[in-house]
Every structure is written in structure tokens, then in C-alpha cells.
Length: 156
Image (tube, one colour):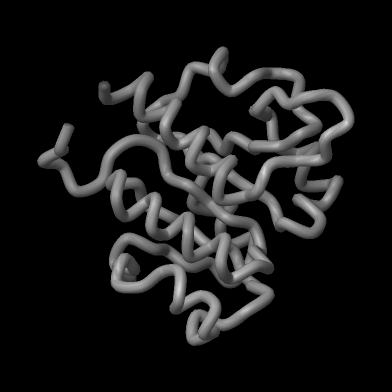
């Protein structure tokens, strides 16, 4: 199904991403599904990195990406909106969560997630259930799964 709307559903935010290929894959997913992306710096790479460019190809639309210099700057724009943290430490399963159009779904760094203080400060947390004793899914895969569910609930 093709959508006429440019940007739909919740935003995706990446907290200090450190693997360029994952960020590029998430940009492609957001581009194809019409979801805005927010990146909270510092990143562990430059957008000129060849590994990033190889995966992102021509899917990058700078107008659909908002870059924040810090989490504090990001947080000031979310005062009247929910931030939903995707984390393996959550109790709530993402399919049971009721998404809203103005939500921002936050994903932590591939190497370390988000700091504990940030984790504690966020009210809404969701997880993708996994087989016991597995650490985590790939970040780009997790983002695609949760983006799809949020759009299923809100758009389709």
C-alpha cells in the first residue's frame, strides 16, 4: 500500500549511534515508510563514512532527519510529547503498547544502550520479546519491527 502522506506516525530517535551501517539502514527504513528520524549526538562516526554511504545510498533525505547536539537539547523538544524507550530491560511488550502519532521511540547505542540515569528518567519503556539468554536484536532490525507495529496501530 502506498501512502500519499510524506511523514506519518511516531518519530524514531537514535541515542548516540555508533555503527554507521545500522544508522544508514534505519534511515532507509524511515525513508521508505515515511517516518521522521532524530539523531542525538555525538555519533560514533561521520555521515561521510564510506560504510554509512554504502548502506544509505540515495535514501537519505536530510529534511526528514533532525540532529540534536545533546540529549538535553532533544529533551527540551519533547516536553509535551511521550518518549518511548525501546530496551531489553523493559517489562512491557511493544505489541501491547498503545502508540500515539506524536510519540518518539528512542533507541540506545548499539554498544551500551542509554545511560542508567536516562533509562530511569523515561516513563514509557517497551521491549521485543526474545528467546531466553539472547542479548539483543540488531538495532536496525529492532527499529524496523517497532516502526512497523506503531504504523500498523495508527495508520493501517
